[in-house]
Length: 392
Image (cartoon, rainbow, N blue to C red):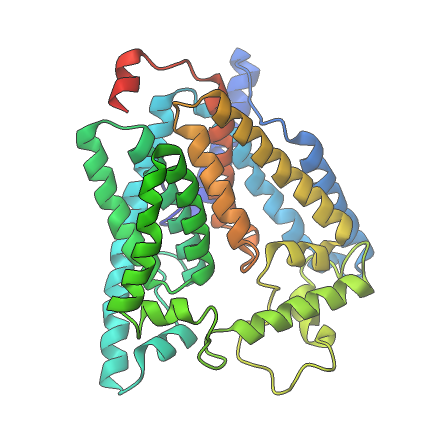
């Protein structure tokens, strides 16, 4: 897991090796394999994906829909190997370490981009938002921000509920650097998801602290009105087409057009990108605003347009079951940080998914699944000794 913020290739090889080792260990020693109780919705989602590929007329191009099934092995790998709170803490510490390194490199990238924009006499926020933003060790800024959102919430949960005083400050320092990088990524959807997940955690810890969240947003608007503040303001007052608001409206309209034309099986996995322009409604004003017309930038509309409305129903069944189970575990274990962290991450990922196709991202999806599996695994942890509870 710690390799994920550095290299998706390394994570994929490690995931395959871990799954193979678990199966061999199970066959050799009979040790029980663990998998969260999600088999029915997962089977429904996988089965409808295969049907969507078969009926799309482009079965040879639908491989990407099947290929990402592999990533769901993360549920098995984490649920079967994370057996204690110490294991869960080590997972967070490893992710915090590698994500901090990636965040540090991203800030070097930010400074270089700022200097280049100033040297060229450009408005930094507009040129940066419309161009290439910081990526850290990842290939895209949305991937970096999605990972940082998840890891930041894990750190916050562990700091608020799970670590001793000295370790708390070290972990918090990692969180501060990651938060700065997340802010510098200018990714509004991930800001929103992080804020909602943080509200959940802070509400559980000390509700009075929630006053700090709007104060922090106001401070950013006041101290950096042309940069981060301007990006926040663009939610309701975009700077022309630079802030992508109209582009996302077109994506939603196109998704609905695909769903009306292909309600049962969608246009097929791998077909949204090549067929996107053909489904843009005729009444949309041309020329089109700049944007990446490669997917719907919305997890739910993407799966419905690509695989059909029944596939979306299966996905919502899966995600709803995850969230309901984790909420029950969090209520049953009110002193423990793991299920609370999993709920916060689920809130963040599912809310940010309305503005970005984060569950279609090969780096963000396995990280999300790892946190969910850790939340399920926590239900089988032994209760901590009283001293540990007092230190948390």
